[in-house]
Structures are given as structure tokens and as C-alpha cells.
Image (cartoon, rainbow, N blue to C red; front, side, top):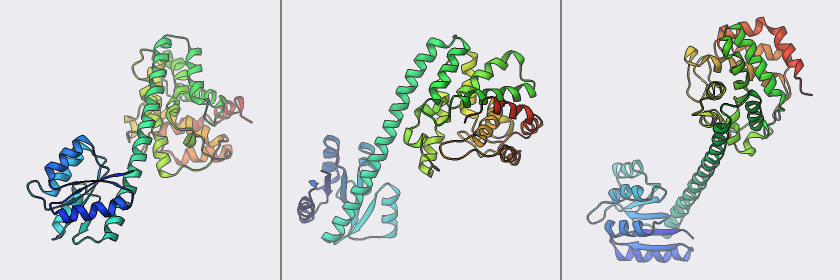
Length: 349
């Protein structure tokens, strides 16, 4: 049952509104001025406030600002008997969800309150979803960070098992990890990446999507294109990966963090999560971007069939200087035979 607070200095309006709204099943309280309304909000916040803009003492707009400092989720409907464009604009600008003009008839009152209730319900649902998602990520991040702390000096084999855990609920088979790893090593060797770090990047690249452990299965495993809202949630896996791998002294996990955060950045700045451009994108992220996209193109996923090798190489070529580092694309294409050999070695049927 939604709680509504009616604020007006006219007793007849308070009485009439209370009667109308109670008959519709709302729990209604009243206040004759802003001070009384604030006192009630501090002790028992209302879901919806219907307030006159012209109150004795503190104005309705000042009340609106105070209410939102006490209870940001409360929806406020302002009303006045002398409407002006400035008064309406000021109220909306300060967070009012709607406006009523006096004299207010029953139909307009109930319609406006019903709309405010719908807005409140939607915002509550979105807030609960975000909180649940954040809690889930925090719990999983904490669990993984505890695990990482125990194995930060462990063997490459242990790190590989951690990467497999991230892939376990995804649509990919574990062969994706091996292909991704070897494509990354191939490009790293082509750009004369420090030899002492080649083995580290080999395993670190397997952690590129570890942040997906924080993405709901309904989105991660959706058979088809994600809608805009779903894609915005999916994009968060890059940042989640950085959080999960943050704070480790292990060289592999340090590189894994860099790759997890930056492998969806694009050369032209249109990528995420930070919109980095060109050499501002870490080299490891630029390498992993090509390896990850090529593997996604050339293998079957839950949302698409595999592209042919020619088509996959064509898409990589078209992304030169836009999605991908031009030099890395050239090196990747110069080594087509090795790329195809890797793909065939770990082919998923």
C-alpha cells in the first residue's frame, strides 16, 4: 500500500484529497505546512507527496528540495492556483514528477497520483536491480579476490583454472581460452614484446573476460542481439574484470587486469569503458582486442554462426585504424597462416 502525504494550508483540500485517495486504497497523511511535512517525512517517509507550491513559511519548492534530501526516491507532485511558466519550470527542474493546477478535480488527482506511483515502482525496481547486481558483483569479487590472494604467486596452471571458471557459464568452450592465448602471444612476439613477459601475457590473456562472472546469465547467455539496456550492463564486465584482478602482486594478474579493462577500447576512441584512443590504449589491450574479435568472428557463438575465415579477416581489415591498431592489423594479416593454424589446432565443432 503506497503512502501519500498531502501538504496544503487549506483544510478543505486536505480533507477532500484524503477522502478521494483513501477510497482508492492509499494510506494518506496530511500536513498543513512544510515544517509538519518535513517532520513526518523524517519519521515515516511517504512514497508520494502532493504539495501546494504556495505554503506559509517555507515554499513548496523549498519543501521539494528538502524532501529529496531526506528521501530521494519520494515522488513529488506540485500544485498551484496561480500557474506560471516559471513556477512550473522551477518545480520540474528541482525534481517534481508532475504538476496540478487548482482547482484540482478528482479525475486529475487520481490520474496524476497513479502516474507517480508507476514512476516510483519503476525506480524502485531499477534501484533494487542495481543494488542486487552490485551486491552480487561485490560478493563474487570478494570471493575471487580472496582466491586470487591465495594463488597470486601460484603456478600458471592455477591461473588457467581461474580463467576457466570465468568461461564456465559463457557460451564459449575452453578452446576459446587457448585460441585467445595463442593469438595474443603471436602478436606479442611480432611487436617484440619483452621475451621475459611473453609467458605472462600468454596466461594473462585468458583472464580477459573474467568480469563476465558479474553479468547475469539472462544477458550473458541470451540467444540473440542484446537490447540497449542489456548491452550497457554487458559492457560493465570490463570494469568488473579490473576490480576482480586489482591489488595483486602477481605479474600475470597485473597484466590480466590491464587486458580485462582495455580489450574493448578502440583505436578511434569509440570503445569502452574509458574511450581511450590510439597509443593511450595499453599495448596488451590492443593486442587482445584483435585476438578476441577474430575468435568471436571465426567461431560459433550462442547468438550467431561462425563467419568464414575470409570474412573474419575482412572484418579485421576493415577495422584497421578505427577499431584496431593499424600496425597490429598489418602484422596479424602477415601471419594469416599461423593464425589459421592456431584456429585449426583448437577448433570447436
